[in-house]
Amino acid sequence: MSAYKRRNMGVISLPTDIEYRNWSKDFTKWKIENDSQLAQYLVYDLGEAAAWDNLVALKNEAKKLSQLEQVILFEHLLEKKTITQLVEECGVPRITLKRLKKQLLQKLRNVMEK
Image (cartoon, rainbow, N blue to C red; front, side, top):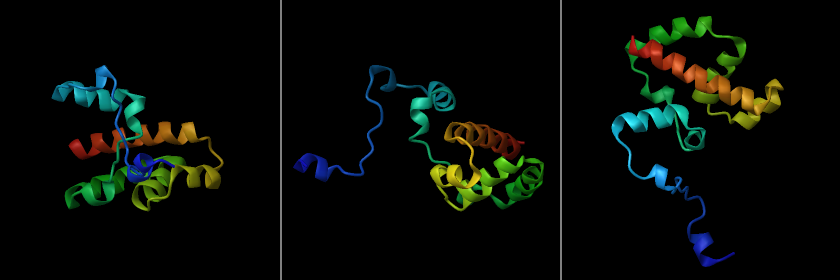
């Protein structure tokens, strides 16, 4: 292994294509919501970010979630289990869990914005 690789192990580089260089605030928001290439770099930490006022709304919303959405919310987002662990436990394809996670995060954002 080269010295460069050893020095940069664990360093994540964002995409460097021209289309990813200069963004406005609105374009950034749109890209984050719609660009699957960026999804791997995004981290949502609802455990620390949720204010007490939002916890009541989230608690009520959690009762309405499907069983898989509840697994994603409680075990993946709050307990930090990986998607790979959930795939093994639930027997659901990874792509399905990622799609449900994206929909769940959008649903929870909408609840907290109300």
